[in-house]
Each structure stands twice: as structure tokens, then as C-alpha cells.
Length: 427
Ligand code: AMP
Ligand code: GLY
Image (tube, rainbow, N blue to C red; front, side):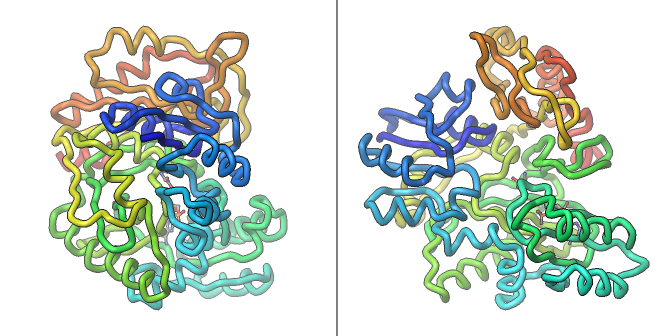
């Protein structure tokens, strides 16, 4: 098969790394890719949201399967445009991608379909939103920009002043552009978060093991939210009982809801859950693999990924199954100093090749924000690398991953030292 991956971050590198191992693969391309991806696939210099040129190129190259990594091109209709041209795509059309692209639509559908989720109210006027805050005074509330904001449009405000500031930033300062046309003010839930992902062809579901992301920039889950600072899998809080409830309360009602609307969803459904005393609430749905969850999940997949994605894209997942390793995996994100605020780019990165040569195959370095400059690997984004290791228990995997991180150097390299702290507490 001739396969195209759309995207160029850590998640796409992980997908490329795994797909490159498939005996069914003839040729792997990635648009736009990154220097890490370039080692296992041919990078194509077309942006992930340049739908027309991607389609033209995919038709010319007779691509058998296109796998879309990030949400933006899905929300913009990449899958519809490709399917209209007779190309097979792993990723939902515009209709299904609204689940992530519009937080308001998503919250309303959850309510309509009886999916457990926090109480909420929607506003398109700053003053209305501000006066509504009064109702929540005294307790924490969550403020969310309506549209896509690269995982940064949500503020968990500890009190009214912070909540008002978040409303101001979104609606008046327009910090997230058009994503600030509407806001959601949401009840703040407490508990422990888990990410649960499933591959679907719109009819059947293949579940991946649980994983847990670390969104805050600082240790102890302090500071502003980022795209994700690290992840591990499995998450011990996610028991078999919770898995059964999640399938019943979170996944099937969604799929049935989609079907009732004629939405043929082929791709990943990612449910971000809050678990408290055995009760499940959905914080959000995403319509793609998580980043960095994918970096912790995909290395645990023992069976071939390609037939699974191909079957989902083709609408014939049937009773297909995935085989997972018992070994836990941990991904630690190495970020640029200053992220999620402003940061410098173009700083040389050292140590990756040596690490890859000396290892026993249980460490993988996935590139996110990297670039080549004058023949040297340099930083090119906030999240620079996702370093993943796996081993027969979590502690060993953690030792392995932090040992690897300590060997990779760039100026101002920052990473959290407490990834998987919740799992360790439960051990
Ligand atoms: P979202 O993009 O909606 O998942 O929100 C990003 C992060 O904000 C989540 O992973 C949570 O850490 C936090 N969050 C979102 N909604 C809530 C909520 N209702 N209560 C508490 N935390 C939340
Ligand atoms: N890790 C969070 C996300 O992918 O949305």
C-alpha cells in the first residue's frame, strides 16, 4: 500500500514509525513531516491544511490510504474533499469533526444523547458572560473558547477574577481569534483524568488501552495548560468496570447519535474523561489520536496498525482486533524554554543519534518541533521532542525514559520530572 500521513508533529512521527514496520506498506509519505519522520518516510512539502494541493498530489501519486493526524484539516473538510475525489481516508468528515471543532455543538450533543458531562452555559456577548459568572462566584469554573485553540483555549479558573480575565482574553482581546466568538462557562469537575481512544468505522469500535496526559506546564500539574507535557499508558485508575461503563455511557451513545444524524465517522474517537468515585464525565471529545497520548499508546501495539486504519477508513472494521503489549510505556515531552508562552527557535539539538545507537530498542525519540538548519538538527517549536520508553513495569520505564531525556541536549530544554506521578501513587 501507498500511504500518506498528514501532519508533522510527534503524533505523526509515532504513526509513521509504526506504519513503517508494516509488511503491507510499499511506500510511506508524510506532509509536511519533520526531520524525524524523514528517517522513516518521504516528506512532502505541502502544509497539512492545504487541502487542494494535498488532494492533487495524492491523486497523482495514487495514494491508497491517507491518515490525518491533526484536527484542523479534518474540521476544514479534508476527508470530504478526498472522499469526493475517490481517495480513502482515515479521519472523519466535516460533520463528524464538529465534535472537536465546535465545543458548543459537542456539549449540546452530549446533553441531547445523555452522555455524562459538566453543566454549561453558552455566551456570545462578553457582558452577558461576565454577569453569568456571578452565579458561580465562590467556586472554580471553567472557561472555554468555542473553536480550536491548539489545546490552549481552556482556563480552569480558581475564582471570579481569573474567570473574568479568561473571558476578557478570549472575547475582547481575541487571543484565539475567531475561536473567541462564543464561550462556554462550565461547571468545574474534580477527579482524575483519563484519555480513552477507539478506532471506528462508524459501526464498530476497537478500543486502545487507557492513557493519561499531563497538560499543565509545571510539575504537580501547576501553571498554564499546554498541548501536553507527557503521557503514559495504561492508567491504573481505569479499571475494567470503568472501561465497561465508558463503552456504554460515552462511546455507544455517541456512535448511535452520529448514526441517527447520518454521520459516517471513520477515524479515532478520543474521549477525555474525568473520573471521580467511579463516576465518569466527558470533558471533551477529540476526533484524532492524542498528542502525546499516541506516543505512549502506539509503541504498545503489538499487531500491525495499517490493516486496522485501512479497515476503519474503508468502513469494514467488523470484528477486527488489535493486540497490545502488557508493558507500560511513558512519553516525556521535551519543550523549549518559555513554552507555552514565547520561546526561541533554531537551537541545536544533540544526543539523539547516540541514544538511538546505544539503546536496546525500548526507547524511541519522536520529533515534534524540530527542523534542519545548515545540516544540523535544531529546535523549531514549543514541544520539541517526545521521548518514549517502555519496560516490564512502570518504574523501569520511567528510569529508562528519564535516562534518555538526560542524554538529549538543547539550550533551555525543559521537561516535567513527574510524568506518571498518579500511577506511581497507586502502585
Ligand atoms: P478540554 O480541551 O475541553 O479537554 O480542556 C482541557 C483541559 O481543561 C482538560 O484536560 C481538563 O484538564 C480541563 N478541563 C476542561 N473541562 C473541565 C471541567 N469541566 N472541569 C475541570 N477541568 C476541566
Ligand atoms: N493530549 C491532548 C490532546 O491531544 O488533545
